[in-house]
Length: 428
Ligand code: ACO
Image: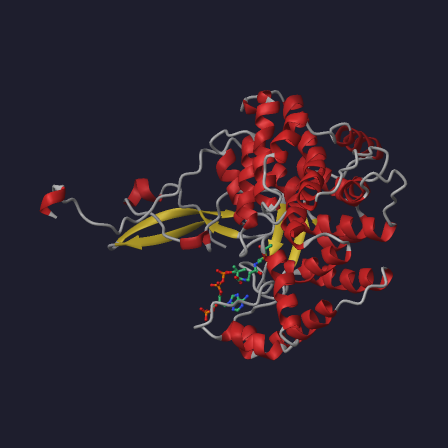
């Protein structure tokens, strides 16, 4: 295959290099296009634009393939733990027993949050959406660890910021939940699994005997692994873009949290469960809601359906659907929302509207049902996603710096007024 592409503009031919990835993905390198031709490319929503070369996650939307550092998501979800996957994403290889134990220890030494963060949290209304609070508190870490602002920190200090954030995000998230619900936060317990400690901080209160079921720990590990990275999606691109200005790790991740919050992205998991509950309250007629989703005059969309890159199936949704059945039966929970979800999925997958547009359930379609079964309130669902996505954001931020990428700065095609003279206010 050719290693260059030919572009003809106004009869003149230009050669542009072709870049080939390790999975044979091909791109036309247009970095010299403007200098050569004075043209730029235009691609609203970056639907067809590669923003970087990355060695972290491989995704083939047509085939429904997702791999972290080459390892299939199915194997990682079945056999690994969230902390091991975090290590894999951030450092590029599976850890040895000692490396994993050391990484886990470093994270567990960082579970306590500064008192000042707790004070800032207490100033938020209890009704504040947890995602806004999470973003603010992560950003506030720059005030407590000002050394993190230095873009040229030595490697060890960057690593301190990394493990601190992985540790503290769970304590911050649990504190946010307890602030909203008026419950007492229990102190972090560094003697138990990362996910078990999180659940215990969420729901343990003053009960030092509180124990988290292994079924719950397993489910949470799986969910977090499935969310841990997804290459250049909206929030990850945000983290890379903010990070490209040499903004600190905490500031960049805080930006990612805000991007994730939107209902078209991570916020969809909350919207899905609210949609299923609305359908249930409306009598459970899924056909009616499918028709609404197809009606172009109705703003309603089937939340948890469709994906920018998966056009066959979302491999994460497949794993989550099976996990969902398993967890509900293990916990002895019967949830009508799951029946409605299955009905909706079946109806949508046989409807030409969804088939023609290649719209399939995405990762968010079933994850909310599991979170609900674990007792996590709806408004915390996207926070759970953020905890899961954190290692991916960190790995992408770290890679951006290791690759010494330039500041991100897209161009535009201006469509406004041409130059005109100012008109005095009394003459308008
Ligand atoms: N329900 C009904 N119709 C839909 C849906 C949906 N969920 N998703 C896409 N469509 C239709 C669009 O109306 C459009 O139809 P048209 O061609 O007749 O105009 C067509 O399918 C293509 O949709 P786009 O919005 O152009 O696709 P895009 O790639 O820009 O958007 C997105 C992808 C945002 C995920 C979209 O499918 C959506 O809004 N889904 C619901 C929200 C959701 O679940 N988001 C979570 C995504 S996963 C994640 O971020 C973790």
